[in-house]
Image (cartoon, rainbow, N blue to C red):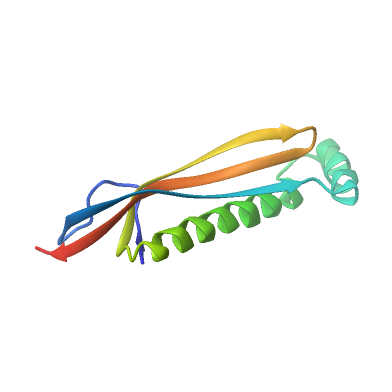
Length: 106
């Protein structure tokens, strides 16, 4: 499965548009992680605990989007985008979405 944030893929042509596919993941912060982040806030630098949490959440959303595309027998998902929102205090959602398509060689 090809995933692209562009509307075209080199040496391929979209032969059929299958529709919008999406996947989301919602994660809550963990109190222990907050303590470590609070301490790092004083020292400065990257708060890797939150970076890891967001990376895992983004990957889960992307995997769910791909699974939805596979159900449509898509060859690729193009125009992939990510968005995020706060669902509740300390709970964030990441949504991955794009257009599932069938491809043919040019």
